[in-house]
Image (cartoon, rainbow, N blue to C red):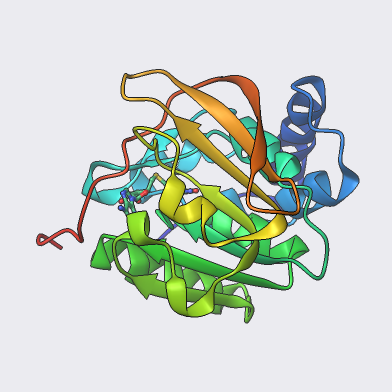
Length: 220
Ligand code: SAH
């Protein structure tokens, strides 16, 4: 059985995490609050429980990773969410980023190509009572055409180039945030719709994500 941390200990770890998010540039109170209310230990494998609240990415099943809290904070902030937003997320992974989005947005549609990861993430959403997350086992390169257009789109795996198919599923004034690049280090980009069919692009800095892979995984 998993040992529950003494409340005081996890409170201290949480406070430390919030301080590091602030000094890393996360200023939006809604984002800080959402991260504070999302128990990262629930999303981290047993082997790494001790490190749940550390400011670091950690391995999860299927050779994937749960993102570093600061990156989750900066990406969530870059989306400029509000309580009316319908968000599409590509790459559910552990579901940690999804849960943070779901604390702020109205609805989160999340797509994952590994069945195992998706099943585990769905269990966590149920446990946390997050009823505004809708998941799909599919290839996220294609987005979720039946539910488009979206106010916001977040890609949590590296896109090899501008994700055109996803931009096409964004509302005219929407925001899409994605790591873009083919190497081990990518550039985090923020695309903002111009109200017609174009968009502007802003570069937010270097990040390291696992790549977006085509198709659904055949292994579990
Ligand atoms: N946001 C996650 C981290 C995800 S790691 C978290 O907080 O835990 C990136 C995820 O994207 C992995 O789970 C990977 O399987 C998934 N992924 C990669 N390519 C994909 C694709 N084409 N469609 C859907 N998911 C994809």
